[in-house]
View 1 (cartoon, rainbow, N blue to C red):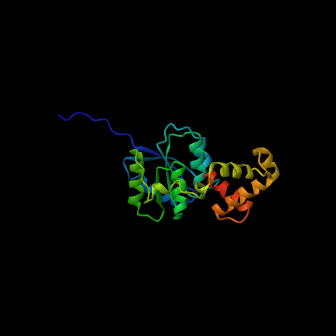
View 2 (cartoon, one colour):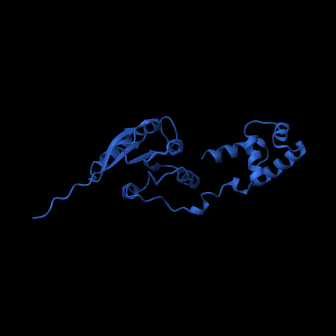
View 3 (tube, rainbow, N blue to C red):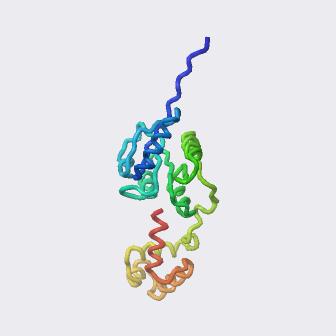
Length: 209
């Protein structure tokens, strides 16, 4: 007589998607997967952020939600040290989008145009503790324009981003205003930007991702 084996619990999925057609399609397909259970659906990233993690194994996050982008959801999950594994379900094929998602903790990344088998393979791999994403050179994850700056230049750019004038920066750091201008000129050249506004915009984008 064969022994009784406990039935494995299905992977519990929270779907974040604003497109009703996509929601309907995924719902129908997941219902046919014995090892997956669609526990919650929302069009708002804030609902996942506010949710308790009990009962959720994986969050499938669309790129564009009703209240925020997928990257913002990932950023907030990372800030609260969430144990929920995240899979980005995206129509954005820009390599930079993939890199940003991985930096922010995404464990999986698949495209809405992919075959549905790829979607389910990604979910199962992530549920098993693996990372499942399209090909990426992991060495390039930290390869940002800011990598060319030394510690002093990064400090200056951080202060610059707060709206300080050259004179205020000089007083803060203890150098002449001309020296500050010299440093800023080097920073602009390294970042391949023309002025402080462009440098600050680049700094803000890179440090917030």
